Image 1 (spheres, helix red, strand yellow):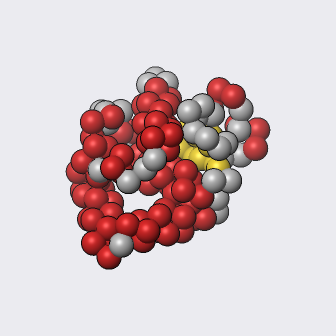
Image 2 (cartoon, rainbow, N blue to C red; image 1 turned 90 degrees about the horizontal axis):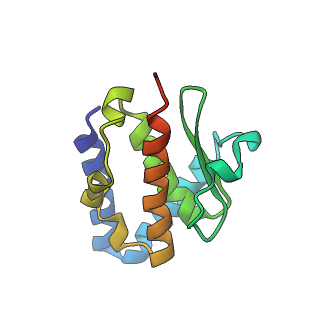
Image 3 (cartoon, rainbow, N blue to C red; image 1 turned 45 degrees about the horizontal axis):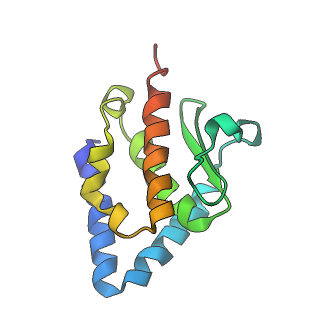
Length: 137
């Protein structure tokens, strides 16, 4: 699946929910956050090295068993983590390695999140991009 297709899918969901009411986006993020923890990052991988440090709450991400996994108790953060995990994991490794921060500006998630959540969102992307550099080498 191409990155643009996946990004547009999330952008369209966000735009549709915003058209109803801005709180609907947060409800949707919370529901995604609940799904994230159906297959969470293992406890032994929830270390300082894998922590999204600028997130207000504990949020961890790592490449585990051939794909990205994440964990958080904070449902909004877990919701955006779910989106990032889904996008990165839906792409072949070589395509995922080409992802940049700017790609995610297309879905305008940063317009929805508070400053600290936005910072955590972009830090998580940077962490994931960094981890991909070691995959398949």
